[in-house]
Image 1: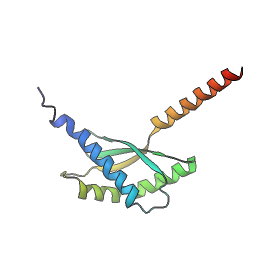
Image 2 (image 1 turned 90 degrees about the vertical axis):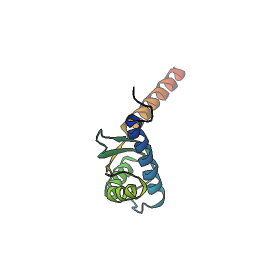
Image 3 (image 1 turned 180 degrees about the vertical axis):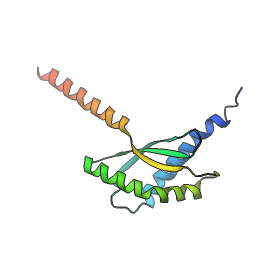
Length: 123
């Protein structure tokens, strides 16, 4: 039987640490004007812990989202260096920023439901 604090919890714990470090970096150290108001929604690590997919949401237009993705991609190396300083791991994962489509999808469904509800009330 696996111990609950064994290897299976390590990726989750590491992902949460990465999320905290990335959030702190973006709030305090990121100087790229392309990076707008960003919320880190989660971090997913590959099985070998070599890559960290950092999911984010940008509050703004499609153009602002595109610019923010460019800025975040440009900052990935600096974020990785910061992770190297903050984490006690042998190999610091490569940081890959990805827009969180799930949140956008949920917001779109919410908007459709609101429109449907409004239309039912008018009819």
